[in-house]
Length: 104
Image 1 (tube, rainbow, N blue to C red):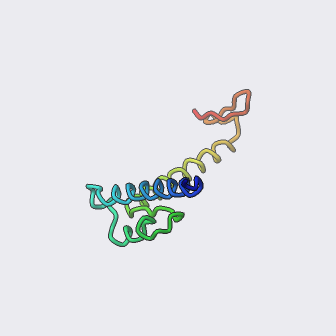
Image 2 (cartoon, rainbow, N blue to C red; image 1 turned 135 degrees about the vertical axis):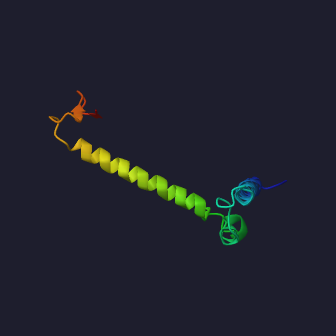
Image 3 (spheres, rainbow, N blue to C red; image 1 turned 90 degrees about the horizontal axis):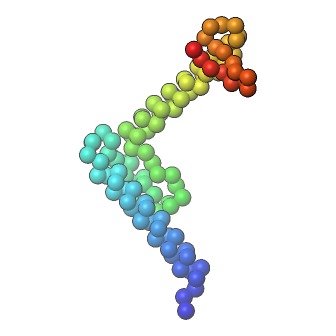
């Protein structure tokens, strides 16, 4: 009879490999050449390196987009913090009964 812990580990490993393989090929088959993995990026993918716990590297295009999103989020948060510190007497900021800030 098969050892159940061995079968569970094998199934988990196969699931991980299949997921990583799908991700790898999906990143190689992107039509937009700017968003597609370069050879250097592909060689760092965990499915190739067999370091299954490593994070999946972003393509350069994905990295730029993620950086853009982070920068915009930081700017939005800074604006919100600034507006929340304005005195309530200004026409820009008002607080409701719960103390939540509304703009406008």
